[in-house]
Image (cartoon, rainbow, N blue to C red; front, top):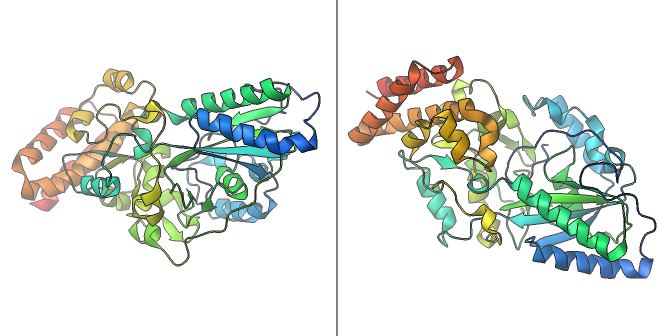
Length: 400
């Protein structure tokens, strides 16, 4: 199974292992841990400080993930990680935090909601409706604001600083989807939620619309108990997946996942997945939209996750016509920028082709706009983008 943090979404590149106190974002080895009778009080303070920093829940996890190793290795051996070679680079170290960062005995696991503060109460219905609008590009909710890596890393570093102020120097290292750490496994072990059948973390009081982050520490804090799963017989996330990427409960083939295809995959999108992508041009939220627990999803406490660039309902043609300069300027500080302009155009070309198939029969004016935009870019496009533009234009012929 893939170890996915929400978004989703897609794991980030590995960082080399380093001992506590020697990597960027650390404060040195502790000269002495707090007395045992003070640890519970320290945990409560950590939770209070975390709330002040915008985290809606913080737990303490034991770092023994030996139970997760077999599943990780089976997932990798099946090739479900696709082009994400970095998923296999560190082997079982992903399930062994104390090997990744020597000295680790606990993980402070934290979550931060990203559902934009402004938006309709019936946001799930609103998002489903946008999937049916051929003029609109759909961008995953987590990517509509500022890059979460920067936001969470900064806030976790501030939290570590507060701990250091309270107890003195200690060994720690901050992570936010940025190293070979099994984030969902750690978070579920610490009772932050349970792994849903779509492989994302779920919580009865917060759904799944949140980011995860961790601080590996050398302090023997009292660990929280794991939470029992509450998906029971529900399989809505499995049934709704447009590409059938959730092969079975808790088993995701990333090679079929729209989030992987539009973000991590560098080459041509396999033809069989282009039509199912619809107007999803960066990520996919379908499994989360279908999940009944997300009626309890929390709104973001930080303005960093407010919608930028009109990404709650962007015009697909306009996005496709952005120059590379405009792409880099408009997406400064956005997680989308990391895929680069070429893959952005690749994804949009597929969305435009799917929209053209619909608009050719229902909206002549929109169909004309789409054709014109595709043709305007074709001659100067890279081979990768041109292949997808030609596919998109062929959808018009198929509809006529």
